Image (cartoon, rainbow, N blue to C red; front, side, top):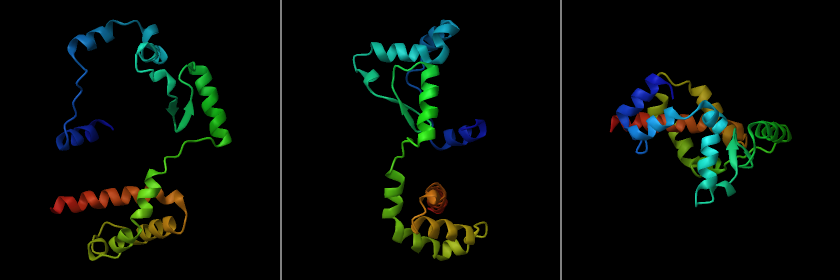
Length: 157
């Protein structure tokens, strides 16, 4: 989130950083760049924890790679997996949108949507019909539209 966007979000829901005590920040600034470079400090903290967090894989750009990977090997692994199509896709969004099918069609045919001047009704209809005709590439746009519309409706309440 950029600066103005973060400021707007802070007005709606203030964010708290419970672990950002002054002493912790000062200690972080005193660390050498070598220790902070490429996430070395985080790897060190995780590998020394009693939670065995190092047993869980890491994810970057929706591609899973082993915890102990160096920056170079992680980059190589993620590029190879990306080329081979081994990208993690969380099905939660599609499951939710599939369950909301009836509601979505009622919503886009409602007076509130049709009378809202800034909506491009053709584009919204294309997104909805595209997604529900099994073109899952519209999932992000449909999710965004629903999120915006629910937020817009909440402003009236």
